[in-house]
Length: 343
Image 1 (cartoon, rainbow, N blue to C red):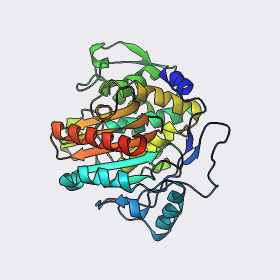
Image 2 (image 1 turned 180 degrees about the vertical axis):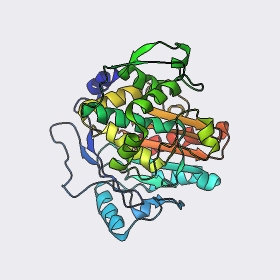
Image 3 (image 1 turned 60 degrees about the vertical axis):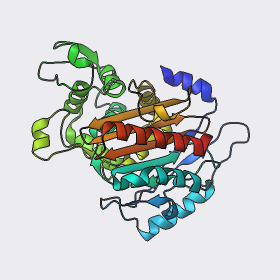
């Protein structure tokens, strides 16, 4: 499992407990422990937030307006982190030509020398495409931890389960049996639609949406299965925001999604991602990124954990852009954020 290599490389690596405030008043706070003998520990009230000065959000969605209390908490929270003006300027200049069609959310997993959290249009609710599979994974790990399902249990694919689109399970044929763990891995590493639908049936759509609520993902809803064109025609769509996905990824990267073991399993799946356009294309050779992509005809997204010397979460979501334009924007933002944090 690649997560063990990651642990060896990072030594006393970052352990993050995240609660970061995102414009709707939901707070993400990152409590960062740096490795080494003289680890720097923030005070108990110094969580990390999206502060009003660092956020440019044109959303009219549920995360658009922060309360005065959450703004004050976020401003205090970011005081322990470095100024993010260079990062904000670079990202804003890259995204400005596209207006509200590009959303960016950044969360540091490093220490006080990292820029403070940053969000540009991060609260805009968009069709999630396959990024919704991160929520399905989160609920699977929660139900596994509570004993409701077993990762070692077996799922047998039927002809009714098989759908088109991305993935490799569809080619295995009806009657194929895989462990729940294997199905989840396929769902993330090759964005397997058949596997995602089998897990939705196992977990229950209501339970998955309750998990979104429990995690504070205010813009995220699972409304249909993968490749369900009838549901799409009826107006049902899976939704999320860049801020929500950054929050979820930061809990995985920081070891706080359910527990450390569950978070490590999630990270191992992300690190095994086989679709490496987007964020990865903007990073120097040798920099590992654990990420999840998503694409529809009018939506192209990528979000993940960049395991640089100073690690961070970055999510870039687009709408109404062609695939080449979206891929170019995502890789350019990725390059700019890496330069601002690790260059």
